[in-house]
Amino acid sequence: MKAIAENCKSYGTGTHIERLLNYSVYGGGKKNRCQIVVDAFEELAPQAALTEANRALSAFLGWCHEVFHGMYIIMDDIMDASTTRRRKPCWYKLDDVQMTAINDGLLLQGIVYEVLKKKFGSMQNYGSLTEVFHRNLLFSTIGENMDLATMHQDVLTFTMEQVRHIAAYKTAHHSFYTPTELAFNLTGNTNLQILEQAKNILYEIGIFFQVQDDFLDCYGDPAVTGKEGTDIQDKKCTWLVATFLERANAAQKKTLKESYGKKDEKSVQIVKQLYTDVGLPEIYKTYEEATYKRIKEDIQQAKGIPQRLCQNLMDKLYKRKF
Image 1: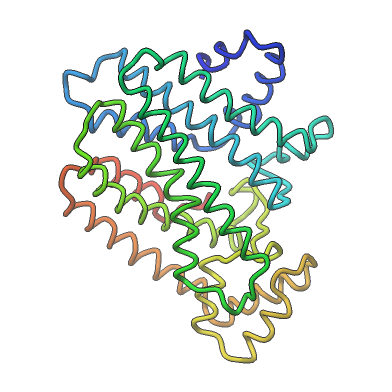
Image 2 (image 1 turned 60 degrees about the horizontal axis):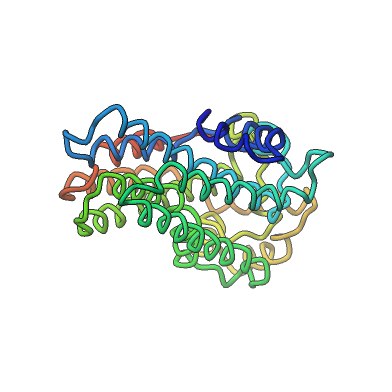
């Protein structure tokens, strides 16, 4: 963490960058992505490579991904018109920031590539590590585009396939696969079959994580989750609405269409009542239990992947409240 800040001190905006990093990266959040890089490296690297120097490099790489994620959430909050993140106002909501936050997001992205070059530029795997970040940017923005496009779609046409597709690009690749891929590249391993098997499972974990986020956006306690839910107001294509459409009658669907995507509190409460009427809270509990067991079994049967990492991720996510 300190190493990244130190690498930025030579810039004329050093004080601003330090404040930006402290607010949007280091201050709050679970730092799961950084931890995945470290844990995946520990499990995937051969014993001879598990030196203190290499472990430090994995941590540095993890923090690079957290900085990249800081850029991602700044942009996401602006596009979703969110008000809070990590129990405090979104960065763009600060009076002396506002829409300059867009430039700040790009600044964080630039920092990642700059410090990557300084730290890994002379290493053989520099090119592959940089490529991982480039591909993550592409996949994340594709996922965001899919997500935002739903604002112009008839809510009654939302499908579960669409929910999974958006979650795979926007969440699974960025938050679960990319940090594992970074660790894999840091080990120097070239067995891409291992990475592909891990990808299939990590995508399922990421989709599971996004479904939980969808549920918590509606039913979570903002004091615990750290942010106010806006999926209903923003007309998001979520697991909740797709599941509702699979169970609702014609009258309920008509009411949903009239209320979904409206900003007023009355409309939001109407949608939440519709969800309750078809039993979504109970359906979610069944889904979470069944999916947890299924993915855990898939992890046990997979060969060569970082099994301990995947098992720990599922145990950490199971019945999470934030």
